[in-house]
Image (tube, rainbow, N blue to C red; front, side, top):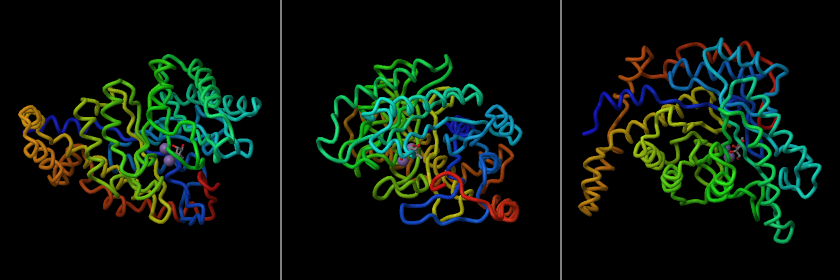
Length: 388
Ligand code: LRH
Ligand code: MN
Ligand code: MN
């Protein structure tokens, strides 16, 4: 039996970072449906993130995306966040929304464009110095659409050079997270398509470079928990971008499409004793709420991660190891499924009540009047982030 007091302590200590862009208007390539009350600037995104933290108690940091969250004074933005009760988390770079990057950013054949892209990565570290952020998160849309369009191997050399320059600029307490993605926007070959590529570059770079797993960035059917287990064993898992997908990079609420997969991922984390924030794995959301209200959707996502985590913590690890060592296939599977099939909502309600929170954060948010307040106050606002 799992130790219930220890499970509760682990759930109380868990931290989930929310992304500034999830609070802003977003859509598909077909249409952005504007919602009333969306943030008009980075401060309002941070205020919404602070609201999510007030109701959940486990989301005290918000990731920024530059230049979507560009401000004149980042130290002042960090102070604003602190006043709201949150801190600024990872700084995400954006080398994918500029005409110059049509043929790539850091892997572009044009050295001038490569310079511009690398300078943006370096500028992001300057921002981290001001916000006190630990993590620089890199995702490159770089790739090619047609065989022969550019040299696959030379592009790896260009990528390695840009990563090296960026890595060497990191401060002592700062880290680089390298995110991979199989395809989109490049359709034939992406320059960082999979965890192996990201891992190999991180190993070459050094200790403070680690892999970020975005759960939406794999081929259908990929066993993501295997990747988690492998990277944890190698000490090279740095972060997650959590979301759900049915088809491609859908960016739906995490745990919505496949809560069982999320449980299997969280079990590998628990198995490695890597849940505690001190272990250095950043659990971040990377989602877009195109048709649903954004703040309650983000709260729901946080709760979904908590539920998967609670189930993972409830796995009877001694019984599982005994069954595995005995070669008892059915019993081992049953032990895992017993935990997965447990209704952990009452346990999480207790954890929240113990922390002085409402046991039902979505209902509490709805009752709070915050949604009505932002709709009234932010009337006439423009959209921010995706599609801005
Ligand atoms: C790319 C990605 C990456 C970006 C974010 C907005 O698909 O997952 O993390 O920074 O979306
Ligand atoms: Mn991502
Ligand atoms: Mn993505």
